[in-house]
Length: 528
Image 1 (tube, rainbow, N blue to C red):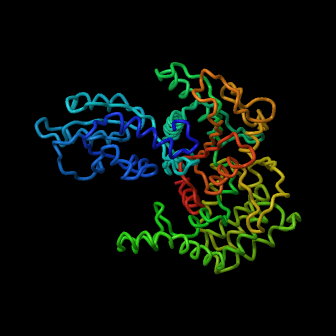
Image 2: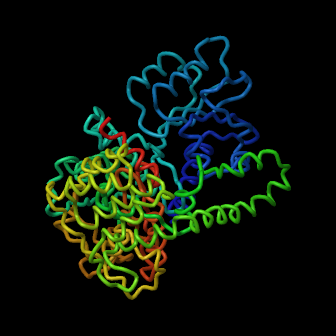
């Protein structure tokens, strides 16, 4: 189980082993206390029935009012933050009226010395165990992880940000906990695009990659179980969000991406059904769950037959640079003007088509952009367009030419007319597995594992056997995108893992999950 290719199961195993079983006593029930982050972490991989089999009688919210249970012991699975540690201390502040009989504390990550000192000086007698378990990420799906820190987008890309370095350091720490959970010490690489001077970002990917490499070395040096753990067969690639702006704003027609783009879903809850579900008895709830996907699909199709269908054709032509018959687009203005002049199309959809036009022509003139904005009547959203420069994506041709990315030829792959675009990250995944990434554009922070050999393919049989407890474990390719991952990019991890290249599992993740609307909202705030 520790080497499972399912990220959700790996996290479940780590929590069971290092938290629940670590303090379990046969026949004794304990209370499990979680903060906001660990509630989401546990919800992503465990059900209440799983917890009950491990001796958990009830799960409580650390930050809500709780009744004292002085006869029961409590497990605190929390983040090492000032807020959470203060709430914990408050439960044992009064010597003769502890809220619980004892505390077993498990932090998701390294606990700062000042917070640890506070614990020592205030409630040492109540603490029976205090450990760091190194799981500071959410297993969103079996091959997808997220740190659930959407505010990192502003911190990393805004020119007014004061905490960029602090945020990148936090991200590096979280990446290390992911690698530790997977029991991997990967070779680290990052994208360095030729012709890009990274005036705005100073190449976040390079900075983060070097920081992760240092922290990985330190982590495995301190880990007494492995002493100094050498590089494993896995590889970690770090890229900045600006490397593929097209995939972030296209209307996708796959079910998951389409639903999150077009339908009101908040915190993974389909709002139009959530109230109805709350009022139903259990049996009818179970039956209703079977209809949720049908309702969701009908909702999506309603949008599709409204305006999305005609938008998709224009978007795909601009993204691909060719039409469905693979004829080069000669006059992109003929594609976008009817959309900009259509009053039935919303402002954000018009912004998306303007941006796709700009990416297609590799930067436009200020005069041309002004005319496009006037035609679309989207003057109040100018910042959304211009703020792409903070991601090192040029909007104006005078800002310097981005080199047009060379794409893998997929003309022989069967595709729908309205879904021809393939996210750039899929090319990267496939090229990495075949050992075809250019070493100039993808520098190594460390030596390349022998698993990624020069024969042009990943070998699952090679590697330092002293570092491998199980030779049969699959090679892993971990991709981290700074600034958000899209649902279409998440899908690529499954497609490549399930392709003919059987011996490599692809895992993708980011600071947060992106939808086009969320990204445009975030872009508008960047210069604020």
